[in-house]
Length: 185
Image (cartoon, one colour):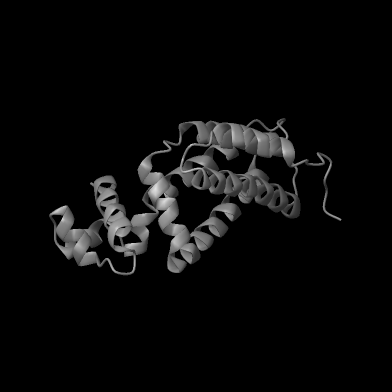
């Protein structure tokens, strides 16, 4: 039901604009009450980010589970490549990304969520058993990897969903050179 409600909401946001669409509009279009809407989502903004949180939790868990002997940058690359291939790059995802880019309140919420997710990824890199990585290096690697993800997403939106996201991710990880012996000064 959450996915269906999110789909209805994104459709309304695309047609009417985010700010001009109310929770009542979404609930009515989905055949439910406003109160029922709030059983699924605490705010109108949260419906936009429905699938993001679940994916983020899985990515963090996968990074934490990577082998201790694997280089942290390689761990990030491996996990993000696997998840990039699993992300269903649908018209709804494209519409959602366009909506976020066009709505200042959603850009702010996305920034807040990305900051939290980056902290959790950095913590997961540091928390891998048998891995010695300082907080600075973990933050630096996490931010570099998520910059690649951001660039992939932007290019995909610019090309109207036609760019090969997996190929762009590989290109980004190749272009961002990481000194594997980085240690905090």
